[in-house]
Image 1: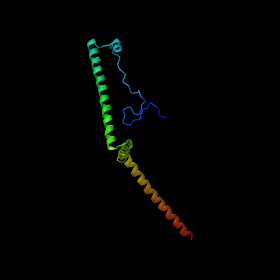
Image 2: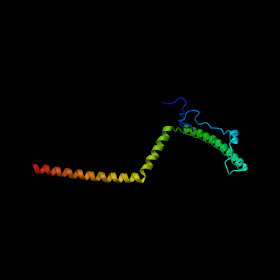
Image 3: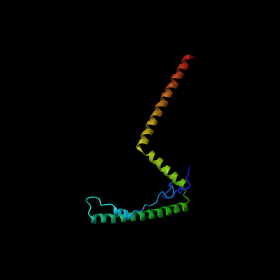
Image 4: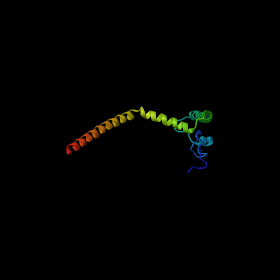
Length: 139
């Protein structure tokens, strides 16, 4: 059920997405210029906001490039260390299991099950004693 265009590289920022699904959509500055300014904004305020928007969009693009480079570097380091995606999964599962074990809900559940086990064991012991006594009486 895997699509031919699906990115399956576990170190990819686009993992699991269809190729081309994560493309940047450029802002059409001509279309943006044609839209009227919201009420209450002066022309100078609108220009300042548009300038700030352009800067922020440029920063976002730069951050995406830096993130992609960092993810590639991370993948190379993991490969050099011999770490596989399975190792990462094992580590995540181990940490998750540890988190569950130290959680209050787990501790309370464990205590409750322990008490239930002790009471069940005592009840079965009593039943066994009663049956033994009845068998002894029948002889």
